[in-house]
Length: 595
Image (cartoon, rainbow, N blue to C red; front, side):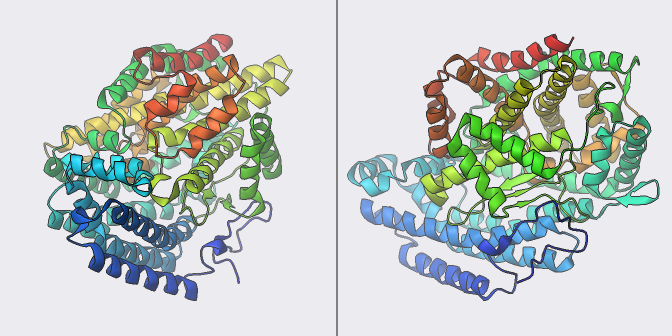
């Protein structure tokens, strides 16, 4: 059957994913069968267990959780298919309609069985402990029960939980969709062309200064023209979050994200403050060096990701990129490389940049009974190679955790989910650096790595600070476009330093960052992951023997272990105040080498 994602713009040299392992098309009879089956299972589950979860025997409770897990996997399959189809081509109206319909079906099913987790959380602690002691089958699900009960203090009345869950599809989820479709539909004038978001942003790393300038100004102009829509979306979602946080009694806007990541507030605050205290040592220092390389006192904002003047970067073909990344993984662990190879052999990757496609990149875990998919916008830059290494790390992690832990325990908190992806980048970079013997090229590679790390650590913490101020001020009333832009400029100037001149066109660059919309306060997870990987890689260099086995065991754990337990075998502790500084010192040492 014809792949519904393929069209006349699809390149023969880049892969487009094959979603046939899920469904052949939105009209696939198997899709309708699975929806009907999920609805029937949900109704039967509700009839059997509603109102008596607290009276079940230990083994009966384990049986109920297993049935709940199987339903979660089944309903996740068709909702994930709709998400992937939509992300790859938002320009086709039918995909948007199909996506919305599948989200509504999935929401209806999850609302039907929502009572189960609510009732499970009402069971007395001592009673549940006795159940766990009595049943080996129930103990298998102990990590999931532990994480579920972490939300117990913030749980509302059953009818309110159902209402919030059911209305999300026409509330926050709809504003998310409006954002996605608005951004995907934007066209950015460049010379005589009209470019999509991913294509125009790519030009900010062009070796040609005039190209970067024209691209930067075009981005700023188009985003500003749509600022009213993006400001409304931001205000509505911030208020929506404030209302729910107030009902659940979360202390701060970031608190719900920290709880979802199962990370203590003080650990997150320590990370953020440590990075901010190191702004002068990291970004301020590096960008002053870069300005000198360019022979200017200040860099224009559109030159932040510009190649160095002495860099002679040739386009890297897809085949070359695949070989580089897989070779790096294989040198570290043949097992990880073999898992990674499956993504290329089976068309689990969509790498073609095209209008209407979601910008950026992601790895979607889908469900354990299927397999993950990767979305990229590959344009042949060295950064694109690192993005491939990054997303492949996510994919490998998701395969390992899904097989080992199942649908309820495979998901890893965002802070730890970035570990495998950033570690994959580190492997690829170190491998390429070791092979390069030309000292000038090595310096350029190190500078490029520093820029990537600054984007991952400094820039993401600055993003988090932007969100903190926006959400805090939104509690006092709706924010104007101008005020949101002022907050953006303040955090950018603080984080990037005095080596930049910020043109007025930069004020609206906050509008295209999807994490602000889809997952508030997600962004600090990138800084967490980068610093964590720096510490992990340091341990690997010190004690390579047996490291791979411990690392793979950590990935297989999925969400079954907390960060303290996962890091203990490596002798690391994220609660140690010095932990974050150790990771940051790796970036600083790289800057020392090129200063």
